[in-house]
Image (cartoon, rainbow, N blue to C red; front, side, top):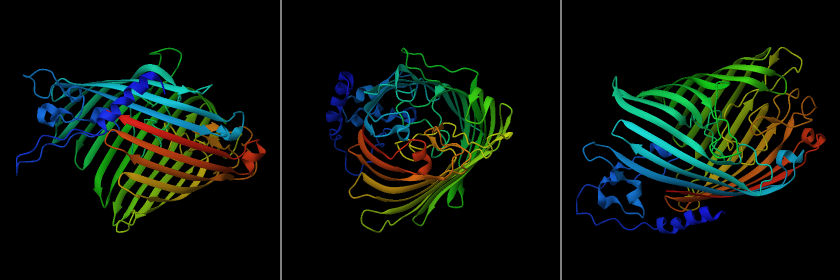
Length: 468
């Protein structure tokens, strides 16, 4: 860990045991709830700290800095995230062209959340992502000091609901983030230079956006960029209270001027339709999503699809609250190498941990069945054990690692069986600021990978996350 990161982590000792709040008068109304550290830091509301008696933790004077007393809702809030993860991977890409790796990845984020009044917000977040011990880090492993997010947002009541507009560099994620995500699994998160507009009046929400996905470089500070050669946007509708769940659908357009895939190259113009239904009832939970892709890549027509399902049942009346889960996923591959159609599914902007953190396989040319059991032995601790079984959707296409990198020597070879893996993961929240996780994966490869020169592999990740 760097000396800078070590200095930051000292604050954990102060924040892990908050000072008691001032005594409350008997029968008085309870104070507003203290904000939690959220996945999207710009969604936090620290205005409750306008009451000095609610500033109960160290550095609260920096969480709420009042600006103009004559302007209601005007304040500045500062924040910080630090994630440290040790990763050991015995055979990245199944050992084909790569050796065993042991390294530490570090993500440091500092944010400034400025509320000019109750309508206008200016959010700026800087990131510095390092990969200590990684000799050849990829663009998702390391990105020295750069702008992670920087946008202006405006919120106002409109037509019986809330109208929200954001413009600037921002992160975008939908649902479980199978296909459109902020890419939180790897070290460098995915941002978009975008204009975003949504209107919400429960149970409805309507969204439209257009963006240029940010491309990442690690040459010098502030060298990340976006341009018109890579664009993505669309239109989305959400509806709550559809039976026991929520329903969403969206159309989006993916444009890349110089695309290179295993069976197609050229201008990519991909039209995407997505439908999702998720909910819970009587101990059961489910998340079902299907995506179809059309358009063209170069001279080839795109005909690709994917489905993803997560279902489970929680025995809430039992000790440790065991949950039995089943995950089933499938994504199309290309059927004919010399045909005029390309069936290889484009996973778009995957999150990097939907299958496992190890990244052994991506959401391309895939059939994936994963039973699991999750228990909660003590408060704030979750332990999950799972077994994953994987096949290719078609042997004409390759086996792919995360996100969509073809394993050399696997396209067109016999054998659909990709392999099986065992996964064990534990997540623990020490307090509202500090959490940790441990994940271990063993992947036993099938004959198609073994004939290509690959072999079994083991992955171990140990992570600490601190948020202030």
